[in-house]
Image 1: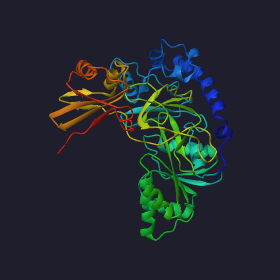
Image 2: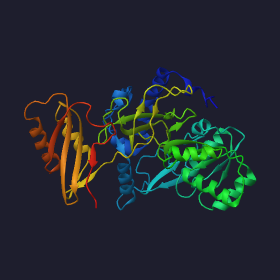
Image 3: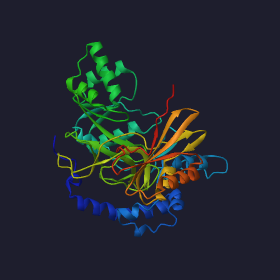
Length: 419
């Protein structure tokens, strides 16, 4: 199973980077022209000058809550009536055959381009091949998950059974009678189906592979499936961005998709972190129909060193490592990761910081842990004063040696007792 979906997967890193950066100015210009939200967000940006990652990093990050806020403003009284908040380059009609809704509620356009969400690559890496039947148990109702996988399977040359969710006994019956090559859906529902088949004493000998997503896929469940003859692989994507990264048979991180530019930034900022450091995934998609530029996923991950043992040369991420939005409420006041970043920016001596909130609710305290390259006299007092200015709350400062704080992406740790 070590062949590749296409030549893009094995091109040199330099060739890939050159191609992505060549496409970037055109995508930014297109977004500014066709997506009114980016006309406003990027109004002062010269698209043709964004030809490097450093230039890209200077653009604002748009996070999901901001996308939702723009959508809600457009839907409300006095709004422009654009349910997509100005982020879609498509309009209702033949080029937008579907509209989907995700929790929030966020609306996403569905386009007509082949493999619109680019899922075929992940299906191929999971072992699916042209001419096979796949049993798709992602939802087809409201959310785009079912369509995301179906369009990828059709692009790959497969036939799809739209199983959707629920009706476990009927799922088992269909699998037994149609004999699909594998399953697509959440890992927990696959486990339920396999257990139901055992209860019904129905064999599913053809279901030997699975592409799972939408929730955690722990090694214990992966091994449980493998013991029953099913090789399960995971992929990471979203309704907004499509495929972001996918697992290969090497099971060594997730390889980035070829149609996105991924950055890892310090939570609460748009500042890229050093390779290997945990931060928020920020993605720029090259999809012209939904051209999201520096879209903050809110998910934490980190870039792995080296390349995939399967020969795929794109960068890899560790996978999902938690949420980047670490906002907490302290003594009635919200404290955001962006405020921590604001404090750090004021002190060039500070390399990294973490705000730890401890104690009990309604009787809590803040401790600002700071890695400093040097600690001139009075640094802790000056930082303490800025903490109060920025957050309107008092906090103690603990100076620490470089490398003391854990590499877990946290800039705010809620260590309070909730008993």
